[in-house]
Length: 212
Image 1: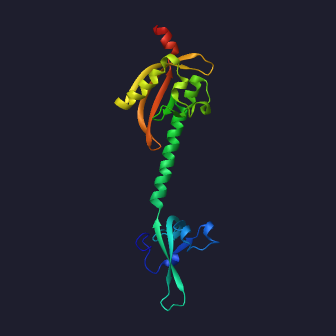
Image 2: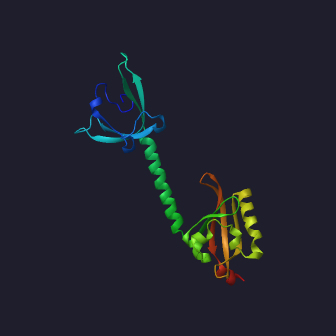
Image 3: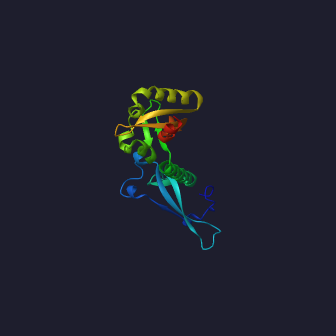
């Protein structure tokens, strides 16, 4: 405590150990239950009024026999987890922001795994094809591509693997069976710790008709 939280020796009365609820009716010395997270309430020295702060801590309890053999005493080993908890909160906030961007994008966004299987799709991507998310996630992408254009999915995935970004136009099939021409741009990225492809899909059926 003296080193980690700058408490002077002899100021142990400034520290309150809050034992987690699940440990209160069990032996803290049971090896399978250690280490555990607990909270230390600290009165920060030098702060007006002695501010009390909750410090998330990874703790362990060790039993020591007393010198005279009449019993034992316990010592607490504690590691301050404040920085780790703050990093976890920041990570969750970034993930929430990315999810909000993904869900609100006006272009269709689809995430494919290395086998060409759809692992995520946003509402705009579902709207282009008229499917619900549950109807698309888990299925191979070529299930939604016109039979004459299915070779383009292999070209698309291969192109991304070889050169980073790839672009093509492909006829996809809506749920009602009608064809829709889409412009697809893809790039590889790491998702959930594994290589994936992010495809940006835009309906260009009307533009295609004008160009022809």
